[in-house]
Length: 260
Image (cartoon, rainbow, N blue to C red; front, side, top):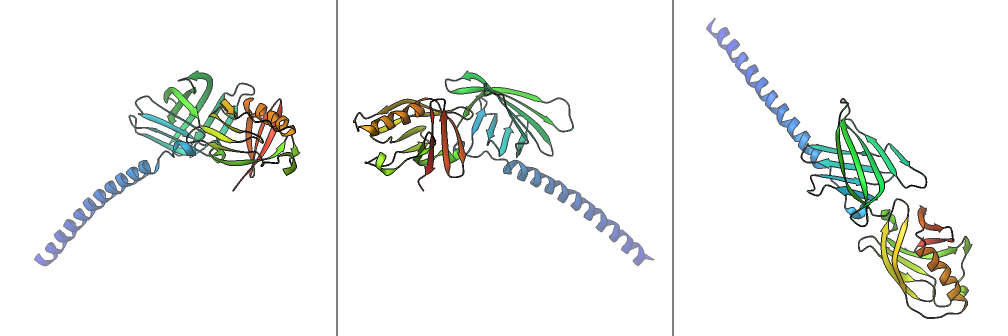
């Protein structure tokens, strides 16, 4: 009888310890998973996004890849969000951009306005709420377009206003330009002269400011160069098509190809 009682007591004790360890292990596992999830929500480098914004005290931060991921973090409210963009709406002629995204825990809406802030920035409003709640948290701040990361490269001119260019039209060398998104500078050769300027971007618009060039004259090539510079100065709309970068204005278009 004593032996049976001893066995029962041992079994109960073992089960109690087992349950305690199981609960403790589950709690630790949950903590690790939460920490892992939070740790995985990391913002990409500003050079790898199309748009970014943050609070002045950096308590919240937004990173956007158009056609890719939205990353949002709020350390004060313990919000760590990342998901692909589910919907993008661009108001025609106004460049007001609205983005919507949702993951298992949160919903986010981002509104990038045309209202300027901090010289080169755009006003941005953000709403984040849990998927099972009606009310959320609203944020407002200043954000900046970085330009599509793939633009960061050296490009050679292939076509001017849709017409393929030949080496005979540019005896020195084919026009080529480097767009550096880190330094926000552009430089290159426009067919006759060296050129350089400062870069900034809006939603799909490239803005080359203070575009300067040397002052050599190259006959007919100079006429072509003037057309090229007019397009670059005209705040062209840009888009990528395969290995080509296309810049378009009402005055004309440039089709460039990656040098690599």
